Length: 335
Ligand code: MF3
Ligand code: CO
Ligand code: CO
Image 1 (cartoon, helix red, strand yellow):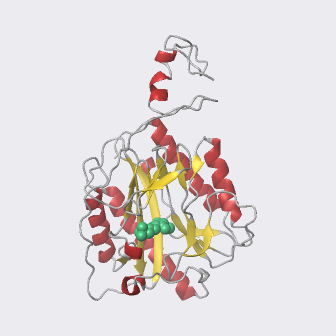
Image 2 (tube, helix red, strand yellow):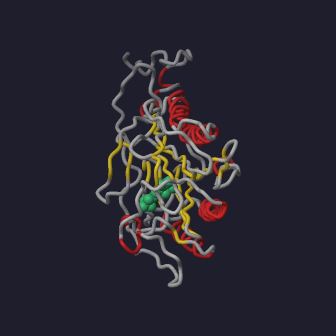
Image 3 (cartoon, protein in one colour):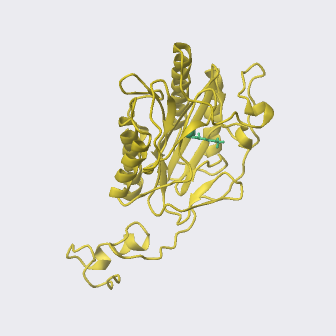
């Protein structure tokens, strides 16, 4: 199919002239008419900035193993929690991660730098007596990840100021009482395009649908099945290179949790397991590329990407969200 001329009828059958209907949004790459594979040229909205030195933690703070040996503990350790004590420490880590994330999200506004958000998170974690897990994890230089617009994940806080119309994912992980808790939300900076808003909305729904299927005896692949199907219904794609993970005494543990359907994966959920569900949903294609900082991953086509994350516990008859049941920040009105 060819795109209509300016004065021809729009492809969407609205009866309006193309120039009065979808012309502008097609040019911006915000819509793709059915059957049209157009080459949309987008420009990066985020570029590498200036990264401030790693922040310090108090001398007496309990540190995770990777800050000493520079190597994280093995993934292959079970994320199964055997005792009430382990579970209550996981609940604590989840609550503290939520508290830190809330302090960061409350500060999101046009003009603030992602480095300032990092400082807020760092100080909040320390005030709870928690270590900000990303700091020095496999060489990561800051205390949280901040992923803006086309950045899918692992954005490093720097001197970039948030702009009206941006979307930003803030990803907080803390280590306290020997356990990690991990959560993230994408929020809107001021008024954003309808396209951005619906991507964020659908991504949150994807995470919630993934959480709803968690219960003992369930296949892990059910999570990816419901997430992928919901994302694809809206024409979005699931980012596949990273997924959820077991979590507990180590930051990233088995199992790996795909956000797309893996029919061959026969792993079953068991009571006492703690893991994350953290779908990354791209408005365009699933492709990605990494910046030369070897952390920041952006969409190949520079279309927007959003993410939400909770840490969950498999209970006797279902699931507990350890990182908070509250309404997400993007639904609480514009910042
Ligand atoms: N919080 C991320 C996750 O959800 C991991 C960040 S690792 C870091 O798994 F090193 F980039 F911080
Ligand atoms: Co995270
Ligand atoms: Co995670």
